[in-house]
Structure formats: structure tokens, C-alpha cells
Image (cartoon, rainbow, N blue to C red; front, side, top):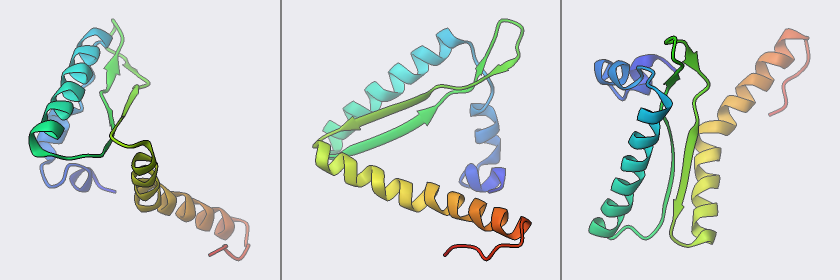
Length: 113
């Protein structure tokens, strides 16, 4: 996936949002974002929401750190499980399958389909 695809066509915005921040700044940003999602859910009448997001971190020397992933589920737990499965199937499973195809090809095996 290119940066442009990841940025949904707004590479400049994505680049700006991807700049690493301190842990303190990230905690405030994630809290405000999740609170905003909760408010929008109520305002828009959306019963079930599954959210995964991240903020890129830096240490006191400006070095990039592993980034936390904020997960949130609002609504009925059974529906949240279904939504999570759909996201996995749509975005994660194809990456796993492609990795397996590349691995199989690298050792001369027939890939599992």
C-alpha cells in the first residue's frame, strides 16, 4: 500500500498527522478522539462502533518509539465481535495470505489457497 492509498488521497495531511509526538500529547489526543467518537455516535444514532487508531510516539531525544494502538468498542458485544471479524477479513487476512504466498514461492512450495 502506498502512502497515498493509506492517506486516502491526502498525502500531505497523512504526513502531518504521522509526525511523532510525546507520550503526554498522544494520551490527550487519543482521549479527545475517543470522546469525540462517543459524542458522534450519540448524535448520529450509530448503535455499534469498533475503532482502532494509533498516534506515533517519540522519546525525549526525538527518536521514534513503538506506537500504542487504541481499541474501542461501543454497543452490543456480539455485534462488535462481528464488526471486528469483518475488519480482520477485509484488511488483515489478505496480508497474511499474501505473506504465505510469498513464503511458499521463496521455498518452491505450492501456496495454500
